[in-house]
Image 1 (tube, rainbow, N blue to C red):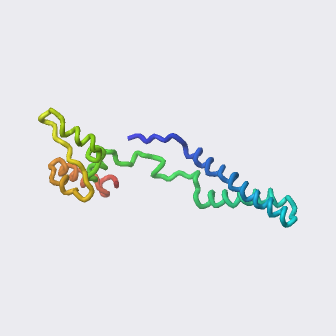
Image 2 (cartoon, rainbow, N blue to C red):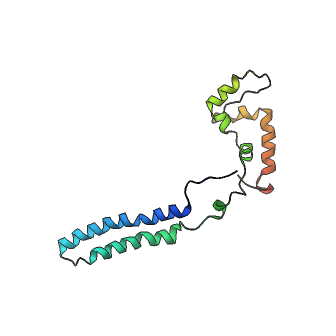
Image 3 (cartoon, rainbow, N blue to C red):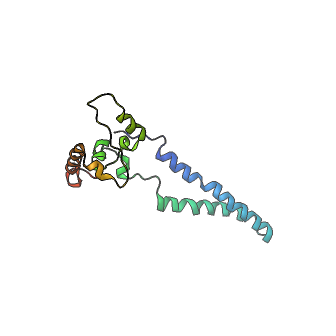
Length: 150
């Protein structure tokens, strides 16, 4: 399976860092009016702006670390595919989509088997289906000790 992203980690991280400027402008504006009210020197305004940038950027760099990749997130080769996940779950796109379920009941093909809809709390309806026994067996074979986790 392929994963598609419409952005990169670098663009998201840059957007996070650029938020320091509008947030610091609010601090600088309040410092400007405080300096006018209390007759402070106007050098406190750029100092407040820089302190605001530092107060936002340093915790972002040290605690959040948006520029570092998670090892599992950077590669998708060890993730289970759609069939393996469906083998572990009673629900999937087909039996949760009411239009797809209704269309499966209206097919003229006598060999086509209608899809059993999924309802929360009614998993036993799907467990009676013989095709799910094969899926459950496949899930046992794919379990945590046999090559992956879901």
